[in-house]
Length: 91
Figure 1 (tube, one colour):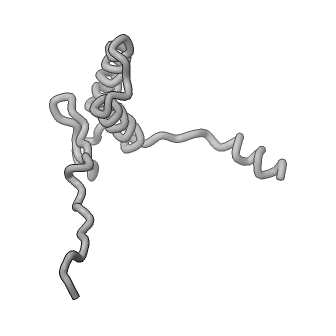
Figure 2: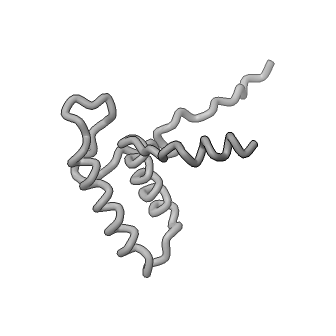
C-alpha cells in the first residue's frame, strides 16, 4: 500500500484549461445561488476575473472547447437541461 501512496505523491497534479473553465462555472453557479455573503463578493469577483483573463490568454486559437467571451464562461444552468418527462397519460 505504501508503494501506491508513493507513486501517487510522485505524479504531478495537472490541470487542464477545461478544469480552470469549470472553476469559473462553479463560481458563477454559487454566485447565482447566493452562496457568497456580500463582504466576500469582491474577493470572489477579483479571483474570477483573474481566472477568466488567464483562460482568454491561454485558450488555443483552434480549441475544441468553447472560448470564453466577454468575461463570461459558458454555464449550463439547470434551465438549459432537458426536463425529465413523466408519463401522465391514463393507461
